[in-house]
Amino acid sequence: MVCINRLLGLAFAGTVCMHLAQAETPAHKLVALQPLDRPNLVAERAVLDLAFARAGLQYTLDYNPPERALQSFVKGHFDGDINRVATFNQSYPEAIRVDPHIQSGFFFAIGRGPQPKPASWEGLAGGRVAYVRGYRSIELRTPSSAKREVVSSEAACISMAALDRVDWCVLGADTRSEWPLQARFGGQLTGTLIDSVNVHVWLGPQHKLAAERLSKALDEMEKSGELQRMMAPYR
Image (tube, rainbow, N blue to C red; front, side, top):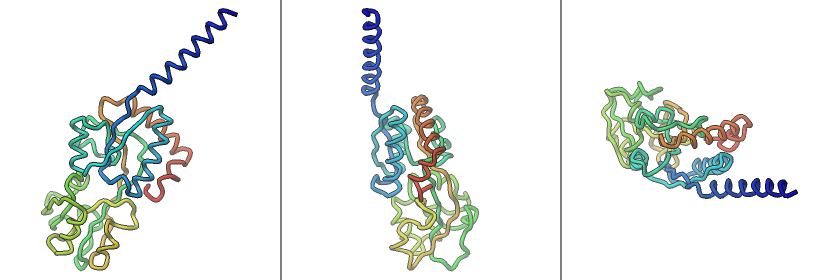
């Protein structure tokens, strides 16, 4: 009986220690390049809440503009970025991509209309193009022959197209059905979809184990259909 009680005591102590260790594990500091109240981010945060909990992990999330988010992640001020495309390693080779992707990104070319609308990135060649600073996915895909203007916001980008200072403002959108600020500028500009990509969570190179655990949790959510249900229409 003494031996049994001792074994039970050791098991209980082990369980307590395990929970204490988990509680003491620092939360991963993540950054998003879009405001946290944006509808797609609200949906993504619900997914991350579940996935991190199931992986036995914790996280915090802050918003930074795209370029600041990138530089802060690369410099180690954040442990991960939740809004980068599958080719983000061209900008940060050491970063670890978490699969499967959480949402999709849709790229629109927005302009005044009469000119032939581009059907792909190649359709921007030779034209005047504006895009928002820090969106490396757009910078890397824009043909080198295009005359590029880098601006500080979506509104500034679209305004340049409206004033005919550029032929096309290229922006990322959360859904394929609507481009940013369409309700405001749709009467004078047209937008055409030129590409769609997968958007992933990326973690720093020191978080390989966390990336594996998070990937496993997301993979199980995808196989069950839960991930698609939670992220529609953003995926």
